[in-house]
Length: 115
Image (cartoon, rainbow, N blue to C red; front, side):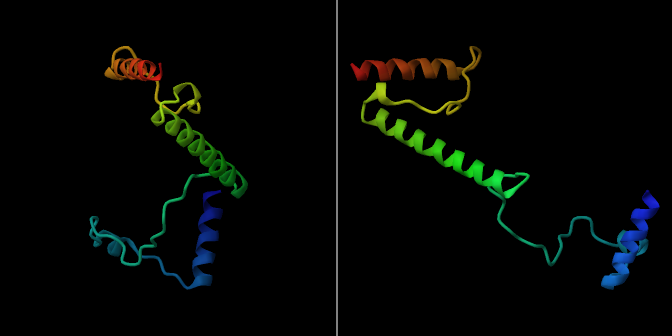
């Protein structure tokens, strides 16, 4: 199987007129240098198997952001009972970290300002 792949690659290089760099030239390269003609493109929004799946992820994210912004606005307007954040908006609080205490204080502050 390896021999087939090597033969196919050799045929492709011959068709395109690409020469192999060689051992000496490879050893003489600076390992810390960067390619001169490096292709620069923006990173993808997400990695997906198909365009359809990528579009579904974008749509789901935009719905999430819309719901989060609406809930955030309700909190800022002191309409706490109407502020329903989407699932997984905040990371889980654990007993050993300070996040649990801060969230408890925040909920207490929000509850006291709502009444």
